[in-house]
Amino acid sequence: MSEPNDPAQIQAEIEATRAQLGRTVDELSARLDVPARAKEKAYRARDTAVETYRESPPAVIGAVAALAGLVLGVIILRRKRAAQRRKR
Image 1 (cartoon, one colour):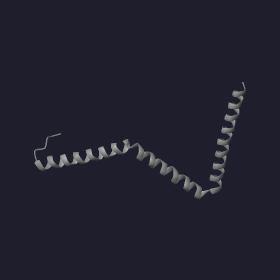
Image 2 (image 1 turned 90 degrees about the vertical axis):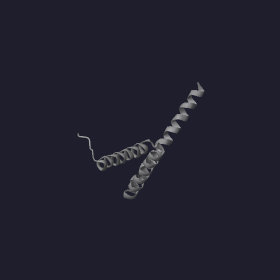
Image 3 (image 1 turned 135 degrees about the vertical axis):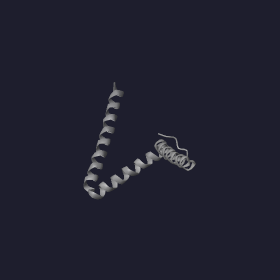
Image 4 (image 1 turned 120 degrees about the horizontal axis):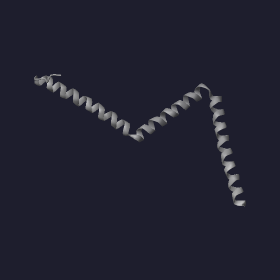
C-alpha cells in the first residue's frame, strides 16, 4: 500500500478512521452496558410472553398453573423434609 501524498486524501482517511473508531467505541459501550442489556432482554421476554398469550391463552394459562403447582409442590416437600429433620 502506497502512502498518500495528497492532503485531501490523507484527511479523508483520517475522517474514515475516526468514524470507524467511533462506531467501535459505541459498539463496545453498548456491549458493556449490562443494565441496558438486561432491560432489553426483559422487554423481549415480556413481549414474547404477551404474544404467546395472544396466540393461545389456554396454553399459557395451563403452563402458568403447572408452574405454580410445581413451585407449591417444592415448597411443601421442603417443609416436610425440614419438619422430619427437626423430629430427629
